[in-house]
Length: 493
Ligand code: NAD
Ligand code: 6OD
Image (cartoon, rainbow, N blue to C red; front, side, top):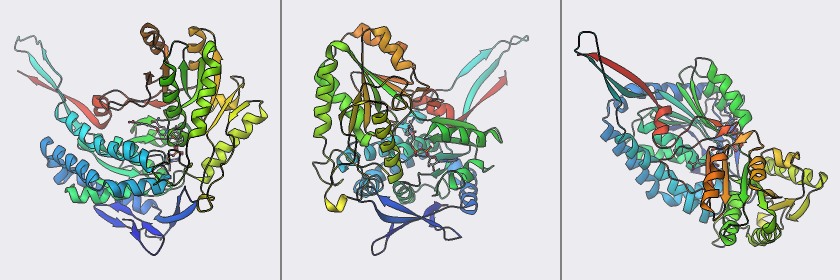
């Protein structure tokens, strides 16, 4: 897969159990965001490679994979999870080369979740009950109705760059557990771990064609070709809301089902009765983890006025202590942005905040880095106060390590401010008043609300976005709703 040459590695598609290049030889550069240097070149799929992957996936549905019992299928998924763990260091290196994220973060979050996503859904599918009804009939003998789940077919899995392995396997795990086959299109920024997963699938004995990967971009490239392919039965997508609109249009042709996890502009509400140490620690994570490139991250903080000054000072101190540096260094806890383009976008918001009259609490630019990291896509963690709610910085998803902090005077005002957005992905509430916590949580127009924590995940729970942050829910049995076709059988007795 990543065939190391002298310097630059090569990343190939994984189709029908084999690594392959593109017929027309088209390739694109893959950057190490910490140095800004090209570290690999990936083959770019045209319609031909996408078609080969979809055809392989379609054939695999009726091959040995389709004939496996649930026990045998889930055993294979356990072997995939074990295979990821066995090659933990390879996945760690690949993920951190692609994203620049600190090894400490990927070691704790991304790679373990990559394995867990297979085990959890293997367990869930084994234990899912079957719905049944006894129905009365005029002859008094009745009928038995029962529902059975069958795979949807070939699922297209289209992924973003921020948590590449975690978010890909979060879809591939349940899709395979339900008996589907998949064609994955990882982000063009971060193709490495998807490609590496092919080796693990082969080693685990997953039949050829069940898991396929094609590389390339979105519009006018592999992403678009995949979503338009008539052999695709359903599309699961994580990414920007505007991309979701395009994919939904493609899915409309042939009436294919979609599951979308999209953008967010998540609010954090800090009440004066919070435990301040806990709130500061949690908000530092929710604003700055993964260099702010987490869809669930907080970009708007509303703080009750009596503790506003203290909160801003302490969050500033915490932000200033974050250490950018080499991803592998033990002391590094702050990585670069994924690409120059993404950094330029975020720096654009830093400029806008200045023009709109924000008070800069900390950051606002590019940090000084050692010579070998100077061309990396580094950016300063940034906090502002003083902007009106109409500001672009408060209304639009930035997806960077920055947050605006605003005081509030009443619970009702805090709820109204949090909900005043077209997005509805996540909210966090910091309070030690349990009644307030439940009351406010119930009013959040979001798919997930965390109280006194952030990104604490139980994979059995429903996950997804309200409003323009998504369509559908995945997680636990909710994933089965998307990845299976529920069919009813009615037997006259
Ligand atoms: P993006 O929408 O630009 O790209 C995501 C994927 O879609 C990439 O693989 C890309 O190549 C592909 N793509 C782009 N245009 C396409 C098209 N027309 N047809 C088919 N595929 C296409 O998103 P991104 O920049 O990679 O990721 C950042 C965004 O993802 C942010 O908005 C963030 O909030 C969102 N996100 C959401 C969640 C969630 O769980 N809700 C999780 C992570 C990221
Ligand atoms: O934890 C998950 O399952 C999940 N989908 C996280 C999304 C993070 C967004 O950046």
